[in-house]
Amino acid sequence: MTQNTSTDLPVVIQQRRQKIEELRAQGVNPFPNDFKPSDFAADLHTKFAEQDKEALQAAAHEVCVAGRIMLKRAFGKLAFLQLQDKTGRIQLEFTVNALGDDGFKFVDKMLDIGDIVGVNGTMTRTNKGELTIAVTSYELLTKSIRPLPDKWQGLSDVEQRYRQRYVDLIVNDESRNTFQKRCQILSTIRQIMTEEDFMEVETPVLHHQAGGTTAKPFITEHNALDMPFNLRIALELHLKRLVVGGFDRVYEMARVFRNEGVSTRHNPEFTMFESYAAYWTLQENMQFTETLISEVVKRVFGTTTLTFGEHELDFSAPFKRMTMREALIELGGATDADLENEQTLDALAAKRGIKLEQWADYGHKFATLFEELCEPKLIQPTFIYDFPKSTSPLARTYDDRPEWAERSELYVHTWELANMFSELNDPQDQAERFAAQVEQAKAGDDEAMPYDHDYIRALEYGMPPTGGIGIGIDRLVMVLTNSPSIRDVLLFPHQRPETPEQINLTKVENAEEAA
RNA sequence: GGGCCGUUAGCUCAGUCGGUAGAGCAGCUGGCUUUUAACCAGCGUGUCACAGGUUCGAGCCCUGUACGGCCCA
Image (cartoon, rainbow, N blue to C red; front, side, top):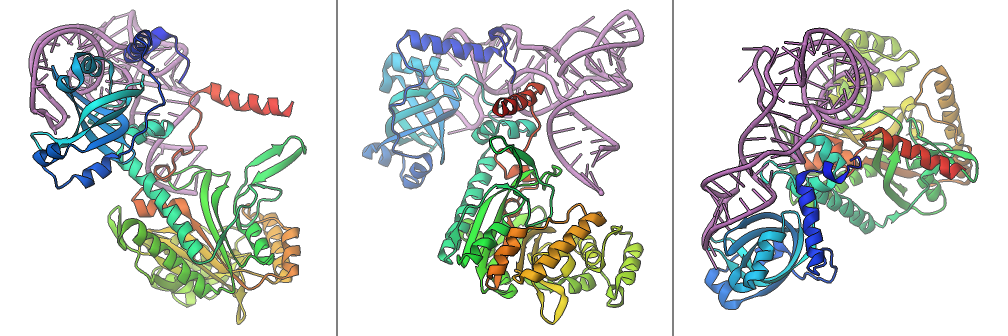
């Protein structure tokens, strides 16, 4: 918001500011911090669910809550307000009888929707049966000066919901619920990882060389070192260095950054989960991934079936498994002959109207055909395994099938949710793969990885046979919370600056630091 | 990057054929001791995203820009 002069402000804000002045004139602090609530709305609803008005009034349970006023219905000598805390809402009843003329008049005239109050009172029920706190004393804790959105329509403008997430969270229950679920999903993953004896580690965000996958990095600069850095695009290579170091089971769940487009499924910064376990094979990777996800669903949602859009998704283990070749044949309608060699793949692509890259080899063509022909059909959780070697530069290949990598991806609702493989631990092979990537980059693949010499050096010390798993946490949360856009599961999704001035602010700060 | 759509009061939205801005909620004043989108009486909320253009006259037509949404790459 731009800086307005006071007369430009909405009338409501001017009125609220005047109320603050009046309060101060009366010696009332509009922002005190001496109130301690001891009860929460949801607990009260649970605790007193069975008790009727007479029972409650006879017992006169004393309670103390604090929260935001969301609704106000005032009569001459009685007022009902609805208070919202982090657990939900509870109705408050203010009366002249309980509070006296001045105490009631303050509620009527000075307390507004949006204000934060603390109250003491006793439990009761209204004649209509609603559980209510009969307030015996109260305190204004924070005066709010901006009006909340319409109590019935709420806030639906998507831009404002993202830019002012705090307002969205105040008024939209679904939004609050989604982010609570996100938090529970993350903490349950951490719980399970701890139960499985994994160690959570932190690796650098600033990389000299953004590796571990193929994506365009962000570039930043270290002023004191006078040196450019990339923001990480994956966690992989540092975590595997730790496996070399003897930490047999490690994982990290954190933000990575990719300098690419923004869409309903892409945000420039997003959360990756990666775990590495020494001595795990691809089979164990797949078993663990399905256990982790189905266990998260069970613990967080108390079920194994969740709705996404029109689909019922069944997360009970085991998930379906098929090789990429089987998928192309069963789902893609290809024949063995179609998959014979590069020429037959070209013919298949031409027949289905699929464009293949100039630089693509057999493996890349094979994978592209899979993406085009099969991905849209993968709704229920399904592992696709056995990837072409050339599309998997960090994965071990089968000893008896050197052109195929011990790699699998988990698909749910057409999205790639997880990626896992037996890690390539032969330093010479890995060096050759890096070299091939460099060649591929020269040939025009702008997603090829750079050569990481220190990673080769680490492998030369010896990395035990290891299974690695990567999970796109935001997409997982989307699938589990029925959220069609990644912005619905990111508290503060990427937005362009609201005003040109904000772009200038960023530049000014950089210039100051550089000076 | 391309296509389509959107931007009007604090919020949700209407605005006819181009004739100078409208509703509900919120707010303000008054009334009301059991409301559940409380009710009754009264008051008005405004850089119609921004900048140009056409026109006697633009929220409406045209051009450009910004921001956002959806789809495609």
